[in-house]
Amino acid sequence: SADVVPVILNEIKNVKDGVAILSAALAIDSFKLKVLKDSTAPSTNSDDVKSIDEHASLEMQSGITFANINDVDMEVQNEMIRNWASFGGFASFLITKLLNDEDESSTRFETLNVWLEKLVQVLFVAFHQSLELLQSAGAIEVSIIDEAVRSCTACLFAFNNIISSKNKLCSVLSDEALSTVLSSVMCTILSPWIDKNRALSESSGRDERLSYHMVCNVDDANMIVTQACQFVEQASNLKSGIETDLLIPLLQPFLSIEEETESLVDIDGSVKTSIVASYIRSLTKLTTHDLVDVGTVKSLFDLSVNKLMSVKSSNDIVVSLVDDV
Image (cartoon, rainbow, N blue to C red; front, side):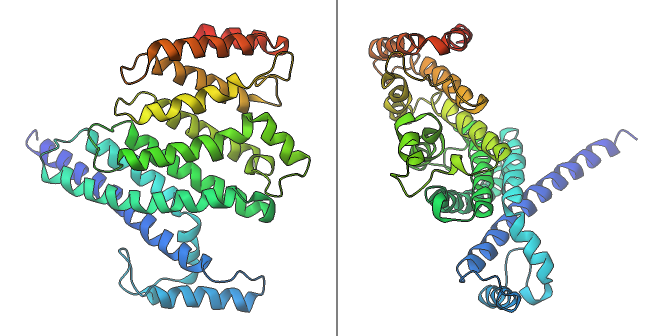
């Protein structure tokens, strides 16, 4: 019957809301469990590991998704901890999609928005905790670095979902918070790949803290760089003032190039090339903004491209990138 269709569609909408909210709740509870376990001194002794699990359970008697932690099997708790970032990324995707299609004055929008705000608070903390690990990669096990990279990637995926709807979700992630994330993305995630002086310093042993890009899994590296570049490009589209923070960091790698030296894009794979391409696209977007001195940006951009073109080994790639933008 035709009368049944609206009822079924409404139920499907409610199911989507439930899945989105449950995913957010699982991400929040799982991350809290992770923080509690991480706060206990690590050990390879099986009895000590069991003690850590029990300690974390005692510290968190209840959560959003469970009334009593003792009702949650320890293996289930460990799976929650291992998958908290996936829960968070999935929840951010679902909630932002639902919010984009919803009237901002509706009760449904308000409810979903509250859950997104709760989730973002956790993601923001997780992002900066993971960055601290990436900045000290040389003193930490590679498996921990890989986990931190995946955590950062999930957080950036969530931030990208939100920033793409910034006008509608302005209360969820403030300009100040975005500026902080942007600075971290440029300095900690992307800079190590294209800052030649830093790479030389690290490889020669003058910096005891190896950058994450020298030790992490290649596939994980590709994923985090992809999300980081997307975040930078989306930030360069915003017209709230935050994009002005991008100008110098975007230009710096190009302006520091010396003629006849190794090119930014004459490197060991597609990762650095994709970063250079992303920087060029972002700089191009900045020239359309009223909040920056367009003449200055264009002049510096032209200078940067000319310097990059002067490196013979990079000509073909650079020509293709410049043509694309």
